[in-house]
Image (cartoon, rainbow over all chains, first blue to last red; front, side):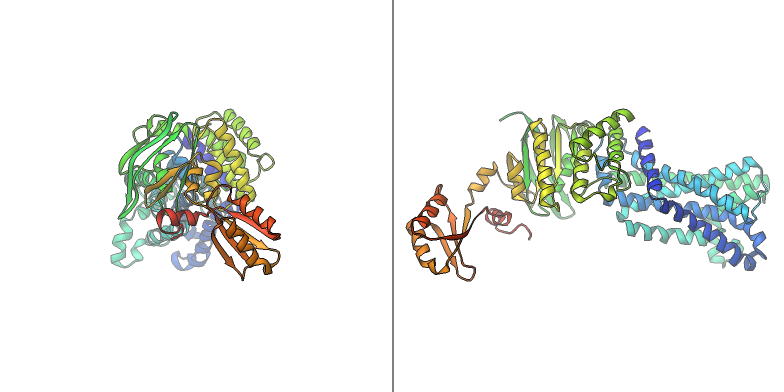
Length: 251
Length: 313
């Protein structure tokens, strides 16, 4: 545990040393939010003011998922620079390097999600649900990003190269993000794509966050969506945590 | 023979169809330096990775200070230091922060880790740069910090994987000095290198490996005695070349060769005292020298002799 905290601190120090990294990793989702709201808002949902309510919960999930790509990139960087070898030759907990990275990335996500929420509020987003529901939505967002960080960690450790980790990250993340309910209702897609989008963990999580923040579904449906999202998070962690640790041991 | 610090028994490791280590037996005495010499791909790094618990052998085993590197990996990690081929330090932290981080991963308290970091920064002449981010460090400074990071725990056994590859001569000498001081204090060192000169300067014993096998071992003097030094002479007046070769022949010089284009005479120094003998004979014959060089055999020449191929191939 203490080993992990030392590494969380180390990973977060990077953002203090490279403030431009934090600035650009924050500007990107804000830019997405503004562009989609004002460019597509009119076409998609009859006006940007109503679209922002639909879009913000989706963009928050997108931010958590895109942010996860950095986990794999960071690990690939440590691997290629020999830092992982140094850590592995130290008498420290085997899981600390991966946990230190994924937890640091989750903490960064808190900052970005809060900021996005603030920007959303400025351009017209209004919370309809209760505060406790909003806190649940926040917890789902962070845990979903955390789970995706472990997928990304597995990829980063498998490809062992910074540039490849970056490209490989976008290859699996883009279809998941766009073929989902983040930007448009799934019903507008062709049937074959609907099957995928309807059951994607991204859509389920977006719908859960939407239901919790916009009070747009019945209490039963909201609870069901939240549980389904948690189930996906648990499933992803159950598969990718051991896989990443295995790759780490063999790296 | 003193007490063994590191022993390996018939270590084998293969990657796919490549046999990286084909049964390596080594013994390193406490407080001595073993230089592991070999070309790229000889298996040096694989052996270091197995001994530092980063990798497990397919067959055979090794013990460090009595601890098995597979069964007692955690105990081994407590007593070893590893400095790698490339400086394994965090670019975005300062020198001090890097050392404190490693100290805390050895479970020192924050204050203990900070105190140890300061000690090491002084010892490695990095005080002035201690609070600068590593991006501003030179290659030599990074390598010194990497070595310092491997010494946070005062390990009795140190592994140095090509510690000076790519460094300028001055930084190399500074690092050699530090390594000698550590050995004077009783540290056991396993050092891999591609430079015969480096093994010669630091190691008590040298083991040459190639294709994952030990092909020669001994003290640096023993290994070099299998090869002879080369004397190169440049004459002041090339017109004296015939007179010079005659004088050298009379003095019993071996392997005499002349290169008129380069205005050079080369001799193999096969017998002890040959150098003084040939210089004296030239002096007596009244031949003036512009330049004189005694050249040690190069690593390539060592490899050519021991393996029949050059270090690079």
